[in-house]
Length: 372
View 1: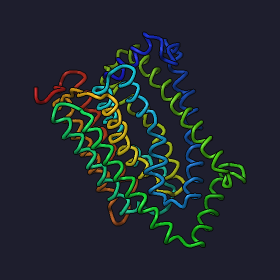
View 2: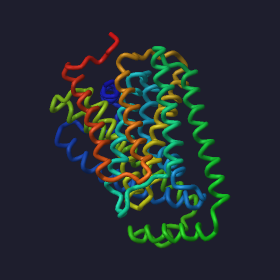
View 3: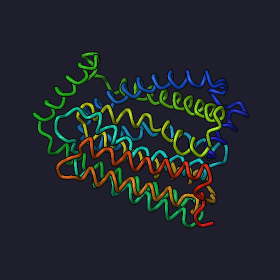
View 4: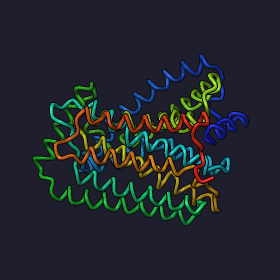
């Protein structure tokens, strides 16, 4: 909810880039226009990250958990940093937005990736990668729960979260080192040829695969900038729409806005799944959540430099859904025979339960604070 208040404060003080989006018609047009921009930027970002991962000999699951995840989580990180540095707001902005985005990422992104997968067999993800990502994600959630239970965020809790992410990166580095050691010249040539074929089918330039590092990082920077600007416009449009139709603010913050900031994650994962890269699709979704909790919440805790009060009772059910969504997706992805499109419907059901909970809270049928 506070993310909306924060955005409205920006508008009132004249800092918002899209304060001119002030009526429903402009908002609706901007939703469609910016959705197209996000689709184009995410598509280009996905291509260039594939090329970078190939150049660095990085396995798909590691690339999805790092390059894809960090790039697509840029909106969440920027929002949290601005809330702390500019508006001195954090607890109410970070928790509902990151939690709502996390539940969306871990349920709907794998579900959409499964439907986008065009292979004849069931979609199979690397089991070791699933265990790795889910383990670190569980540790991140439990750490956040413990910190919230204490009733305050502190710089120490931020350092702990960042240390968890550092451990995650070290684990990925060691796996990449092992992958490079075992990668044969024939496998590398085959991977390059396969990527060239995929890019040619999408109409990319023949020299795209040979893009120099300077151009790669330029494209990444431009794509991230476009993604952030587009998401900012969509958030502002969502606020105008919610005010026009009197939609409860809790629905906008936890569902609509969380989903809007997850658009880059969704498009990158669906693109990876459509190309047959199940590991990249799954790792991007889970890796984004680890980054969101550990960095998007941890770093601002340190920057704040003081204790930030937070209500455990108001967040306990959301944390419960975070754990439930993680267990649901992990259980399906770890099936030996792979995940079918029918299995994906289970993820949709769990997300539907989360939406029912939020609606129940917004209309007063369910108390927000269970411990009050």
